Amino acid sequence: MKFSDGSGSAFDRMLRFGSALLPTMGALGLQFVAFALTARGLGVAQFGEYAAIQGVASICVEMVGLGGADLLVRAVARNPEDFSRYFGNMLNLVWLTLVPVMGIAFLTLIWDPSLTLTAPLLLLALAAEILLGRISSSIELTMVAHRHVFRASVTRVIPPLARLICAAAFFHYAHDLSGWVMTVFAQAIVVSIGLTGFAMAIYGRPAKVLLLDQWKTGATFSINQFSRAAQSNLDRVVLAQFADATALGVYAAGSRVLQLGLFPLQIMTRILYPQFFVHGAQGLAATRRYALSNLATMIATGLFGAAIVAGAGYFAPFLLGKDFIHSRHSAMLLSLSIPLIAMQYLAADILTGAGYQHVRAVIYGAAAILFGLILAACARAGGADGMIAGYLFAHALLAAILWMTSFSLADKAVTD
Figure 1 (cartoon, rainbow, N blue to C red):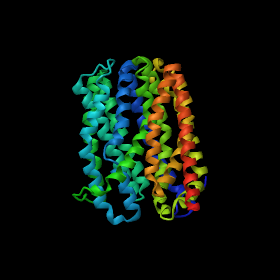
Figure 2: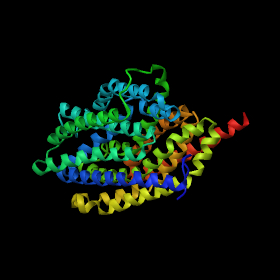
Figure 3: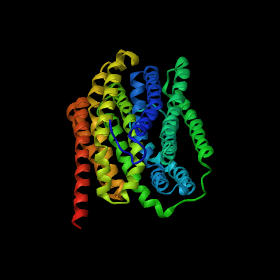
Figure 4: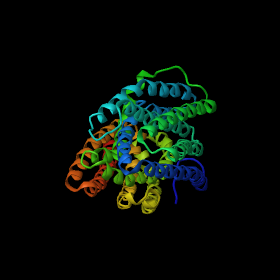
């Protein structure tokens, strides 16, 4: 597999990918075992309810921080001395936006009559998933900004390891969703503080600053990530409106396996991502050439991720229990989306690197709405299988739109 990140030999770049993949595969294993313990411990109905909460939280987490982590990556890739300012800006934006976003997520779920959690426990569940998701992702990107991909991958092990320890301890004694929510909340607080302190110890303390002149650009990054999260999690939120908790739990188990296949893509993307800004200084044509030089690599990585999902999906019922037997079918079909997502990532970064983040944000914003409509229509017509068909179609459509846009804008720039 040959690819170019703009620095070092091909062997060195492959070594970086391999060294980053090993700890990430460890994180995948930990995450999968923790997921299995949670599914078995809660049972299919309670797990379905918890999956709906996680789906909303996974979408809303991308609204927290208003793209501050992406601003940090862009700034540090171009000038490492800007780190302290952008690190401070990133953390300040997280604390300023966390509570309002939690409120949006709470109002989205509180009207669902199938939820059994009380309002305070629902808030704790959302706070745990949103806070840990935002902090862990932001600290990873902080390390990616410094080209420390291996360190970022090692850091990725910490949240699933902590979740696994909690699951093993809690479900040995109890199996109620309320108690699990309180356990997860405590874990999220401890891990979030630990990761933030770890980053400060390595890279230095953040400056006390809020870069208000950067908020528009940051918001476009946030819209992009929000839309991407919607594509990955909206299926569970939509299906919750058309299926009971048991059916949702079965599908959510298969959908959760899909997340395992995205990790190899994210490693490769984070190796390549900073270089898009470097090439972007020369314009859209340069970022497109850079993307095309790494096209085969991304497709191969997508196929590798699909194989992980298909394999994990096949064996999932042996770990989760007989009530989850139909999750195998969902996981294996959903694995077909991974190569399509790989194509999206590469095409979208062409636009971002060349300064067309606003175009990318518009496309992804429209895609989030379109995804919801397609999934709702397909779920209503064909249940879980219909929604899977709509999921694959929507991802293929988005990949085609992103690539066509990158070629169209490049041709326009040449003409002008």
